[in-house]
Image 1 (cartoon, rainbow, N blue to C red):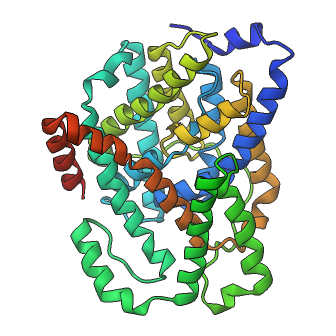
Image 2 (image 1 turned 90 degrees about the vertical axis):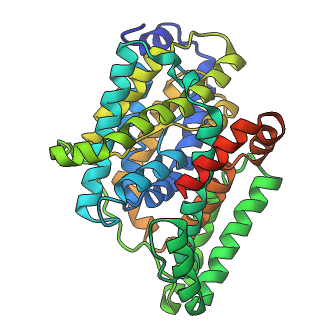
Length: 391
């Protein structure tokens, strides 16, 4: 287990790595801006917290993590889990809610770090895959359905699926059609980009389209809900607030996120390692790297983070060779926080909801579910039970 894995790639850094790292760092950084805001929104946090979660955790992982392509930060799965845990304890978006989400990041970080210290890096093999898949399906349906309140601009109850369906049936008649048309346009745009131009960052494109579309045409005057003023500046250093009651309430979810977040991350990291084969991937050190990223991130107002599939794929395809790519991505987010937040004033909520819904659909691996149904009937029953229990 290495104390400072960053020294490995710094000592052996080659001149030819710089172009790939620079390209990947800027590409993923640009991709992170709308994604981070959308995932914070999904987690029930003000969107600016998505940018906070895209700075310090990335920098810490670059120092302590062993994967050279893994893109750490807010992900759809971490946002899903955070919303599910904290949403049952506090009202979304409130100061209490934000404090609990930040505390959750600290708890996850402590648990992951201890798991790494006690060499539990192979723990992901003990978690049944159908159970993880079932949880993702159930949570994804809840979150995607919940975004309809912004696409249709209607009131929608929170909680289990039956409450949401009843609320939807009662309020769908009050659909705001300008919001529906705009939201549908963004969803269709993202799907088309995903199908026909996978290498183009769809989330960034719809943000670039959405802001001037609303701002120039004055669509906010027709009831389109916009972000409004977003606070600029870097996240302040502050100790996460907690009570022992909140720690006890969050502990089951913190354990779940610690394991599932690690499973998500190590699966992607192994995939990248198998492609490159020019460095060693240490599962225990990965736990420590992710844990420290969450611990330090929590002191800078971050909610739980981990390594994500889509950004890691983009990072690799863009030429990332070392952790410098991640550091450059974080620096781009820092520049955005310092100077560019006023540009997001006219960003419609429908854009973030569209990004979330399309990303969530991408999490639902229907081919994998079909394979389990054909090859593993007991596993498929476990998948269904977990999905229904989650719903």
